[in-house]
Length: 486
Ligand SMILES: *[C@@H]1O[C@H](CO)[C@@H](O)[C@H](O)[C@H]1NC(C)=O
Image (cartoon, rainbow, N blue to C red; front, side, top):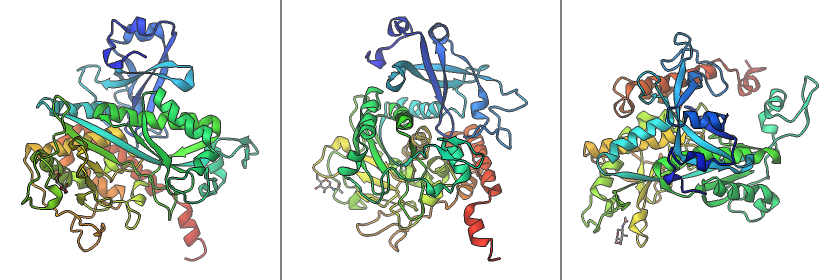
């Protein structure tokens, strides 16, 4: 396959020789890919100029319900007008499970001003990258996803008398927790569990490779039917795209196997949730790591940062100081906050530490390893988060720390000092989407400072919608708890 970085407008006809159609897709605020097939002729005619794409993908929620409160980008008044969608040529790949149809990711622009639309996740990340690259910096990232796998019930009888294989139809008539997991029991790093579903297991690995979403590590995680993939780290922009595309690969490959992968943050009470840990480092123009210190500093304020550069210290301070204000980006759903509870290895406070796996931010860079591996692992986000938003927010906070030359004010967690222990003096992060969103949208929020009012008002508005959906829901927990008792 052609090296995507060398693809040009002029080269497109050659690249697409023998094809008669192209698939394009953009990312919405929930991280969901929304797109369509175009004839090759149409695609070639709009590749440079862009084409009209209905703004409603930023005007409705993940079930296509328009937001209760209409938002600036797309609303009745502006007639859910078209946005300008432009294919990003460097995202070219072919879809292995759809006869190798050519595929491009889109970015969305205002049709009048040609400016990026605030709600476009790929655009938001690009804006943050542009900020640092103007100063000669770049960023690399790595992403790990955990997810459950359920068996899609085959031919389940529904109340309506239909026999249907659809999850939605099944859930309409059956308790969600009756869905069988792909495999039973807890068995992390198992060699036998994947063998029980080996076609599925290997097809994901191979398909990811063919789709340029290379997997570095792929294994079962502790939990029934739970898998974890570490994606091959790389340039931050590419990494965010690959993360979105990884979920697409998994969900698509799973269909013929009648498996439903689930990236919810906490599918099951009493079991660990699904995390979406993100690693990030800064590099110079030549790709050299800028977080590593040349010589260890003997009298560093804490030994944890002895090998962390000044730039890295500011970056970390920036993340820590802004973390509480960007929580809806790391934990975007009602369910996200069920994962962020004490005792499940999930971080719940503004905390950090050298090689500390319970802190919100783990400073990685073991002595003896290559300095180029020095990085921060932000452990707060769940697998349900939109990777473009998570990486954009972390980069924005870190950069704010650098610009303001911020100092780390929270002491690191020591070994054996857990999150929420007496040694953990960090602020408790939000316990609910409502709490998180109030802080995110507050007048003086760091999110407004680094991501802009337009974006915060839009995204915060989408979360208000989510919260209202939840407020109106009557859950089975409430029925079971109160039906006879009160
Ligand atoms: C810092 O680097 C020195 C020398 O390479 C090593 O001995 C020490 O363990 C490192 N400390 C940390 C916290 O990384």
